[in-house]
Amino acid sequence: MGGRTGAEPGRAGAANAPGKTRGKKESVNETGEKKAVQRAASFNGMTAREWAAASKNVWNDVSSPRSGTQLDHGATFPEKLAARIIAIYSREGDLVLDPFVGTGTTLSACSDAGRNGIGIELNERYHAAAEGVTKRERRTAAVRLAAIKDDCRNVLHHVEPESVQLVITSPPYANFIQKAEADRKKTHKNSIITKENNSRVKRYSDQPEDFGNLQYGEFLDAIKGLMEKLLVVTKPGGYNVWIVKDARDTRRGVPYVSFHSDFARLGEAAGFAFHDLIVWDQNEQRRLVLLGYPSVFYTNQNCSFMVVLRKPVT
Ligand SMILES: C[S@@+](CC[C@H](N)C(=O)[O-])C[C@H]1O[C@@H](n2cnc3c(N)ncnc32)[C@H](O)[C@@H]1O
Image (tube, rainbow, N blue to C red; front, side, top):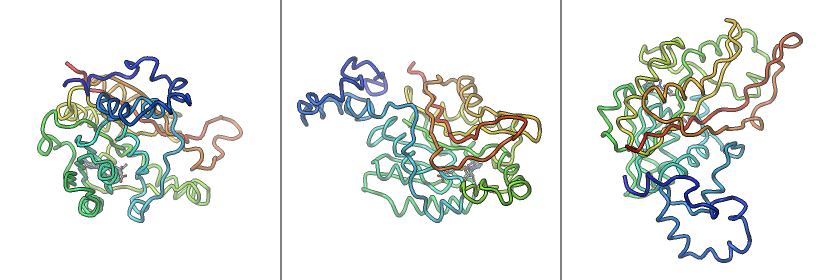
């Protein structure tokens, strides 16, 4: 795939180290010409300085306001988060795919960043919202956006093999949403989980194809099957970024469900390399809830994970 997908972090050596790129001297010397050379050399179009600045593995500055449609959906990610992932793992003109596109946040971020985007969504209502984004937000004629209403397991009907540089997606969390809904109605009816932590997640649909209606075991099997198809459509050296949150199922005696490590393991089983893990720190957006007091100590799950998988360059 040539230099772009073959470029590896750290290859640029000392110039990439954050300490060096922050120096005043370099900022004076970093001419437009030098930047243009660096942008052409890097697979994502970043300069060395931008690359180093983007390389934090804990992000706490990616919240952004949600639209009415996004609030109604209840489980969207911030556009700023999608924009940063897109900036890091793709470059202008690349194709980005979101197989669980929901209201179309990824497509909106693609539009702003000059990436082409395809989103797949099962639920008619959310698909309509994503389609609205494709009509509203096409930044330039060169950017192509598409929202497809289908089960994402049919991705091979819609997307060419080895055409996608980046998959970015946040899947349903098996049937944990249904459990959370039930818990909200009973235990947490008056708690800040419901009132102040924006916990509006709700069942997406009652369709059997909806990943949000699957038991965890069958959900993991379905995710692995999907990952195998995503491997086919991803370019060699391209990236798949799964945004997931760990969970608890204490009612059933399971203190910790490690979605992120299950996704890393499934990705490897499907043929990807487990390339990186980024933490999305959400402490500022969520108030702490008292859990397990006074007998068992639990932390609040106030972060999500970006599980970064990479298709090997053969
Ligand atoms: C966590 S939400 C994604 C939200 C999206 N990131 C956004 O910002 O709007 C997961 C979405 O997957 C959809 N979904 C569930 N099963 C699906 C399937 N088999 N194929 C395609 N979409 C599916 C749900 O309807 C839901 O909108």
